[in-house]
Length: 156
Image 1 (tube, one colour):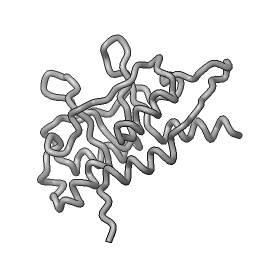
Image 2 (cartoon, rainbow, N blue to C red):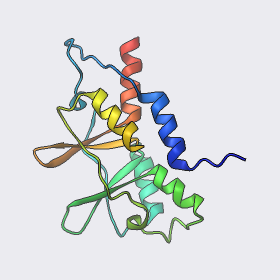
Image 3 (cartoon, rainbow, N blue to C red):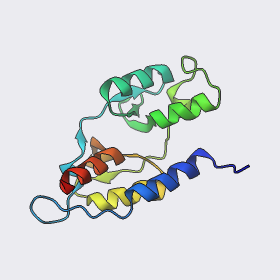
Image 4 (cartoon, one colour):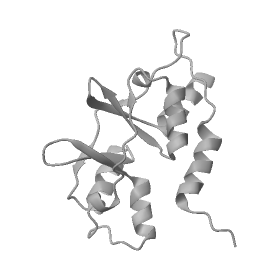
């Protein structure tokens, strides 16, 4: 029997799908994250439960939420994948706090980051979403889906 953990599966899937990508903007230069990111980001408090986080992220169609603490500082991210892992660990979503499942090591990119570099960051870190920063503030989020849908649009 082969034992593959979820992180390994995500890493292999990300590598096959996202790398290498060469994206060109309408102006003929390398496309930046700002051109395809989702502006504004769904946030949720770290003391909310995972069922609330899941409901908010799926209602918004974003697949994840940034976690903010009482002072408004972004302290992590929780995605539908994190919720899936909690279910796999047999946690009850209505009893599990977001801070117990969230990823606290945030990998971010700047609005001027080339999209292919963002894709490489996703692959290297085994993640599907990157918060996007500008002037020290989170201004959006970019996902693997955003990158792939943009690539499909460019092929048509």
